[in-house]
Length: 635
Image (tube, rainbow, N blue to C red; front, top):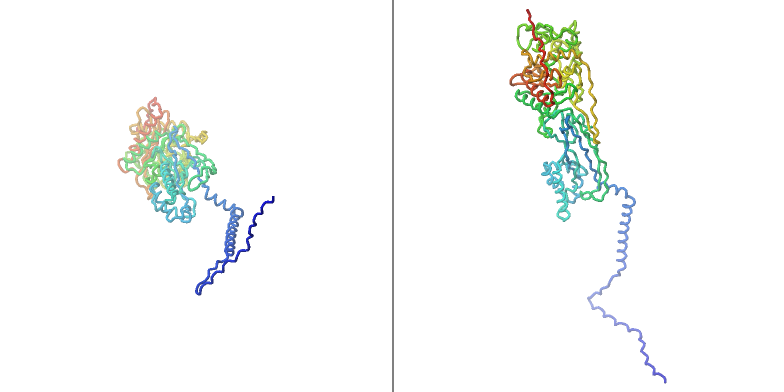
């Protein structure tokens, strides 16, 4: 059976055209849409050009100029910092610090980080100066000037030798500024502020031995005294550290290159701090009481030549240089040249005894006046004709007697002058002491051919030549050491950063006079102190035999170059029978009370010598002085 056929679906025919739009009415305009293709082409061309520019620039930065830009980036990224070497200490002979160091920082800044182009703000330098000024104790204007003087600079020092406490306050300010900048509440004007580690010099004992120690300048370099003399030894060698930074802070994971600093060596002096204190206290008190210009005391070990004390008054505190009197900054004990007066007579007597032209018992008739050259010479007091031994001439400090004794040194005055000159030079007059101290004077000793007019007669008793205090002390140490001069020394040795100790070279020794002559002189010098007719009675020390000599000389005023006022002095050693220490004291231009050396320097000698002997536990003398005759019966 055939299935019924399904009816066929009609096949759709072509669509009928849409109705033609109505013609616009009269007075209206039809809207026509532009083709988008031109616009797309323009946008495409523009994007292509932009991408081409970026591509070319990228190639330039990464390929052509890569090294230059990397170098510039490194300049801004890496910060070089000097690592200051720790300055070595200066100690006394017992290892007690006389000069040492503490941590300190130089505060630096990078002015180029504060320009409007870099920080995108005006007045950044002024703001930074205002924040730092109270902490650094500086005027804001002065700091601002440093920050703006060279805007392209990457380094300027704002303040030197600041304490760790100051840097801590600056660190807190930097953190506060960085936090504000991170919150968008301002700019960090302290990002370029950094520090450089340094060692600040301090003097634990204040003004003790300041004239000898000296001081360092703002750059940490020795600028006076032993600090300058041994600057290379004390300073060490600075190191260097370079680190990466961002925003003024070190990048923790950044590269760090460091060359370690090498510390300086410690210098050990021959000075004994306690004896230095005693000497300084005694001379400061006497200078004040006498209303003098200045004074000095030198203590020397007669056996080794080591200087145990070198005191000046007035002094200064090297911790407070800004308050110091500039006239007191030096070391007058080595830098003042002055006429020694009667303490110099011991050298004339040494020449007379050594040449064998007289003995301590030789008779010397001393008139009240002695005509020589163009004048009449006198002693410090009017007197009838004295009948003195050579020992008495020294004990009573007679100028006339000394002239008469010196004339025996040669058949003519010229020959006698040459002989005396030779001995003065051997004692160290007119020569450097050997200490090498900055600004040290060698004194003045003219050659015999230049001894004109009255000079041949004044030089024997200490006028017409000049010396410094250490030279004067060395003369008496030479006699105390049996006639052998030991070159004075101030340094015992140095200890390097590795702990190795290097002793100073042994000072040279020179024979000046024989031991016999030295013993005779020592005995004569005891008469000055022990005999009732001696001028140095105030220098007596109970239990000890003391040998010494007073001095009172006319003083040359350094301002006018003319004689004005006096130089009072006393030099001696003890115990006279077993010499251990020499003490020399001089006071310039005393204006109140006595100006005689025995009266104002004798007591200073006694105070310092007594303290030093006890401090070093030197036993008392075991015998009495021989008491040589001072005068003879002139009948």
